[in-house]
Length: 338
Ligand code: NAD
Ligand code: TYD
Image 1 (cartoon, helix red, strand yellow):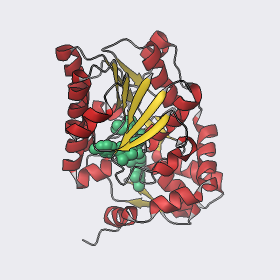
Image 2 (tube, protein in one colour):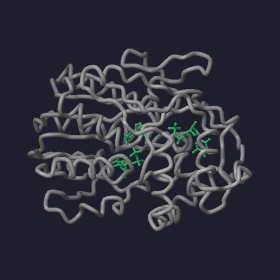
Image 3 (cartoon, rainbow, N blue to C red):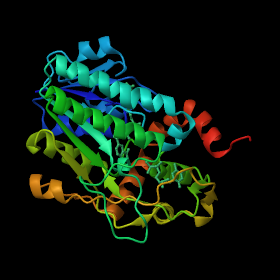
């Protein structure tokens, strides 16, 4: 099988390529990525010399580049996107371009070239926010109610994917997953940001009251879920994917990280809240469990500690990433002049 992975130089895409090539050595993988600030080929060094792997630098908004890379391809696994909520507040336009227009270009070319499966990676953030008071969870039947430019752009892309299934018969599947954590995550996201700041004895910014809740999914559990959907999923269907955490707040996550590293809680710094900050995410993964036999295996405490260890052991990876463009972003986000 020939698979094009879009966004394979990003956090989840890179983990997916490493996972898939190990489990399915007979398949050929083409990694199609624009190498934005979030793309890092160092994450996939382990496979770059394999004859079944190749990298093509290109933008999913570029019709010619997409049409050329999709020729003769069986499956597209579409990760490429602008993925950080805070950046979407600074610059929504980029999110609409990559996440909405880019997805539409990929869908058009997939129809034209007869791609046999288009799997779209989406987020639980399209469903909006849950309250702390209720024990509710997002499921495949939850109404879309995105609140940030990021989640609105991902919602737009989900609707397009379903429209191409209904209108053009493109064989699609979608997964809406919760917050991922694990190796190779860009340190703008809260877990690697907290780990790497703590390792450098820098303050860890916690937004608002720190009582916001995310549903943490280990990236390998996510890769296993995508594998289940590619192998056993029903065309046209959506599957919600979540982790093993039980309503853990951001402040608890940060304290766990400090505890693992033996660092003092005085590193915590409460900062101004994110505009439109969603209070709580939680995912009901009953459908994928019942229909495809998938359930998460990676418990949060063990694998958070493993993730912390990975960042400790791979300082060169994140030190490199934290220089350059990221420094400018960090100052704009956390030390604005006005
Ligand atoms: P990431 O930001 O780490 O990586 C995104 C990758 O896409 C980068 O390699 C970047 O270069 C590439 N890219 C961006 N725009 C592109 C374009 N126009 N053309 C080609 N390549 C482009 O993101 P991630 O965290 O790995 O997320 C991957 C996917 O999973 C995204 O679609 C995201 O919405 C979704 N998702 C992520 C999470 C999470 O917790 N990280 C949770 C739910 C869903
Ligand atoms: P993030 O990792 O940006 O993912 P998302 O916004 O997609 O859920 O943020 C996770 C949670 O952590 C979210 O509630 C916002 C919060 N957060 C902080 O408190 N401080 C930070 O510096 C960042 C980046 C996030």
